Length: 97
Image (cartoon, rainbow, N blue to C red; front, side):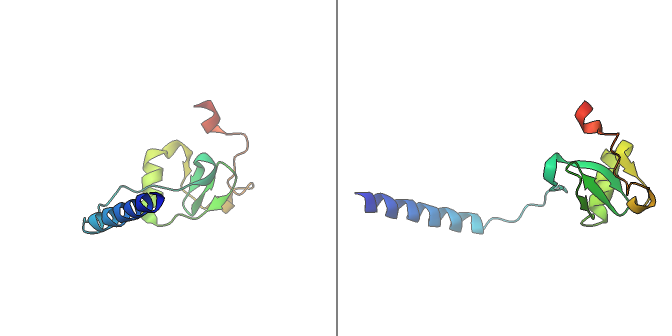
């Protein structure tokens, strides 16, 4: 009986995969996969995540999208111009929301 159930489950899995293979791909909006819960501060050359890790933008669209939605936390300059490399230790704005 167990092998019959296993065979049925494998058959369903294979059938489901072949049904979705014929569907057209759907474009989605730009999303940013950020560790530690999100972007802390954005700069023209990249961003700090909230876990204090530096990342470069994947492309200009990603940078523009984030800047447009978070203009209060975006700085239109390279991060290394600041003495603290752009990490603003006294401004954890995400803790206040």
